[in-house]
Length: 227
Ligand code: NI
Image (cartoon, rainbow, N blue to C red; front, side, top):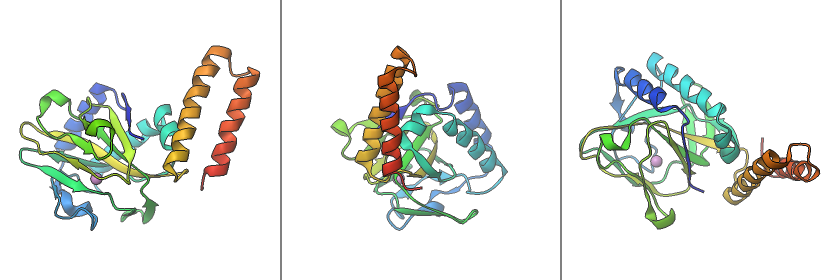
């Protein structure tokens, strides 16, 4: 499943966050390259540690944990601390797959990457190119979302960021391990959850059938989740 989640950050928040991190010091993007992507990548990144990074990470993490659509779609077990990258003129990231396992040096955390996410911090009209292309998505769509919006996609997919030819693309990106490893199972849970939300708004949470479906949802999560 490929999901665009609107307004994870309000547009003004996203743009302010971008200004804040742009004034920090940046390093070559290959510092976090896995063996699957070294050499394919040409961009810059905010270092994994440092005051600017930590402050930005806390802001994004708080927004994620308060976003019902993200929580329902991802069913996160562990979210890798968000990272930040920028692509200026001529920079790009060729077709690659994200490493299956990610180690976070500063905390020693280790996760299996089930889902990858890009939270856009630049509006689409500020740069040319820089589209996120995900192989196998419907019609091979090129994704370029407004500032504050986020694309969530399976880490199993080959993807690339096309060359930026004007302006600069600044984004936040991260991986997460889901409580439900199986993509098909997680997608069905998301469908069921969305339907239960709609029915419960129409009929009320105490409606007998809404209760039955809610129980079914939670029992399926119990059955399929790995804590
Ligand atoms: Ni990637």
